[in-house]
Length: 229
Picture 1: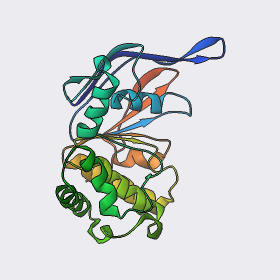
Picture 2: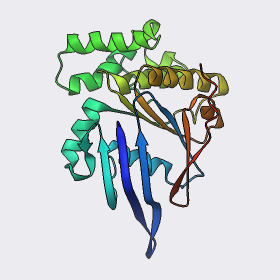
Picture 3: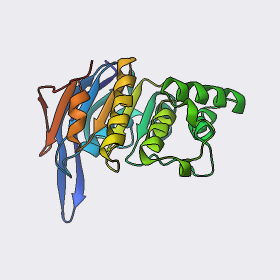
């Protein structure tokens, strides 16, 4: 199992009290799965995703990602785990405007200690695998929002990462761009990666293997509506 959460709880200060966002949640995710994590605003979707990524620590419980016990690692070790094993994308691609698509994708590879030549070669491979070979030398300002988001996905996966955590990746996109991004994420899962999408977008359900609803701190699973082939 690629991701395993056991008895996870998390609360935050809210005025004079603390607000329980996640309450005793268990979750297991395997390679090759695309999970739609849904729920109302403020329900804890983003917090749960950040716990999986090691960006937040739970108040209690165990977080095991790629056999690493994330909840006991230092912040530096968690950052290294993300750098080498976990891709994270957000609502906007957050590409650097002055760099080409290939240079943007190469950034985390350079951070891993690879040479520029090796990083650029792997970045080109990543873009080509996602059908984005025509974008290698283009800069973000010449791309649509959906195209930028797909480049962001390629950057998150660079170096053959097998875990992709996406927080509202289609929130700023129109329907056509949304479908392009979701089908890209579906293809990534079909190639063996574990993909978790925290989203309000009902379209994501059509491509998900499992639909999880988080509400009032608890996690529920609903029947999948997947139509992908």
